[in-house]
Amino acid sequence: MKKKYITFTVPCYNSASYMKRCIDSLLVFKDYVEILIIDDGSTDETPEIADEYACLYPDTVKAIHKANGGHGSGVNTGLSLATSQYFKVVDSDDWLDAASLRKVLLRIMHWEKQGTYVDMIVSNYVYDHLNENRQKSMSYKNVFKEERMLTWNDIGMFSPSQYLVMHSLIFRTEVLKKSGVVLPEHTFYVDNIFAYRPLPYVESIYYINTDLYHYFIGREDQSVNEEILKQRIDQQIYVTKLVAECVDLNEVKEKYPKLARYMTRNVSIMMAISSIHLLLIGSEDAQSKRAELWNHIKNSNRQLYHRLRYTTLSSFTNLPGKTGRFLTVTGYRAAKKIYQFN
Image 1 (cartoon, rainbow, N blue to C red):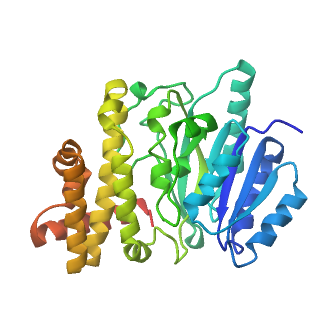
Image 2: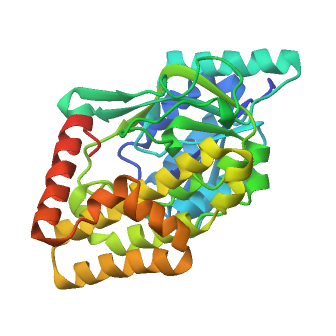
């Protein structure tokens, strides 16, 4: 059996209608990857499909059946079972581009021959509105010099539309385990924690300017769908608080000031998402939750609060009065149209 270089974890819950597209895209280089299909207590044909793949490709695919625990539980299970040097989560409704995956694998194999490694590989991802035949690629070529070993001290400035998401990242498995990242169960939006908590443990970065990950946009029950997000706003608020509290940014700043600046901005983006959707809900209860969220940050980390309140993107989502709320929602609508993120 050939060496497996990347463990792909595919959390699945009632994914029967689309999971084959995802898994087939990972099997293109089946001799070099490990695929863990995590059946999270599905009630449709997902378990049977997972077992079928495991039977057809026993050297590549493992089907793991577990009680329902949510997306985070599936990621946790995959990480605990991963045997490859690198680890990537691929959601069951998404898929990878074959040519781009080949580039990534060749680079990892080159490092293997040199006896070296990198802690985090960054590549582009694509907002893929497959049903509407339109795409929007999100790249990082202004942030990371291409195909060079970098540290956080070498990075450039992120533009307003850019941030590191789970779709764009491949971590060295050892780094993830060292970071102690564990995602909460029965909770949506936990990918924000996965793409944030391990960053201070990353000492080397390598950017490959290729559109590897296709992020499917279009399912009505998708967690990023605006109406769904409004229904799950309590979970979005919960994860925002977890992200804001899980890393000591002052400690990060001592070693990697640019990373600390980025991570502060990341919290700002999450605060903005929570604040905007609470504004979209528009009820008195939503306004109370918005005020409580800001007060929570203020009481738990006053220094971070002042940065978020006065110097970052989230400051524009906490403008006072009806005019402030109107400007915030109008800006969000414009950004949604430009970047096509849901």
